Length: 154
Length: 162
Image (tube, rainbow over all chains, first blue to last red):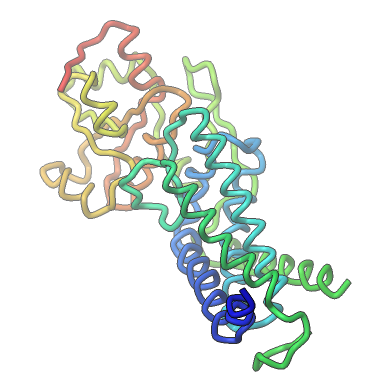
């Protein structure tokens, strides 16, 4: 057990988690930023938000994914950015769960505003929950103050 | 406290970048969506972007007259919804398809020919989504039949299976 804790606390393991979470969110943000109108339609199709708030969400959410993702990869404010991306994942998990329970056919809009030939399924949930693991890893094991990163360190 | 300060800073940076991009990129959308009344429809149509505003929404009567004139109908639903029943002669192009797939499915259609798109009914967004993609591919006369499959079927108009 001590071995696993040592491994999780090790710098390479923390860097891998940072790259996984940050990289996936950067990738996910790019297409949504490129097509805000399509992303707004997808947010609307989730049928969860009041009409007036849909565009605000569609405009800001991809940028939050991108900014937090880039900072996480760069190693800036690791715990804070991991917390933000973790919170976004929780929001996605709740939204997908509600619509799966409703039996609504909706476009995930996870990575692309165009593709997703597959319909939303339980697989989306599994994927989001799996992505929470490296987030928790960072929240738990990332030292709050350390000199392991090149960039800002607070 | 540092964490709270950092979190606020990250969110503010994201909001600022989003605002700048939305204002200056030329791809921006209005911060608040417009609600546009569609004649003959119970619910107003939520128009999220200017691209969507350029889409012409039509109701049952107009859709029927376009059908009688032999204009192409596109069913934007998924194949498993299309197969059990759709507007007679309608082509199935799921709204989720990639632009190049959509393009090849409509290769025989001229860019200035009319197209009527529909999905389930007033609540579904697939037709609007597909209409936006068609506009970006250069199709200029795209209509969304707002009442969709539900209105068509209830009116007893020509349908087919398969």
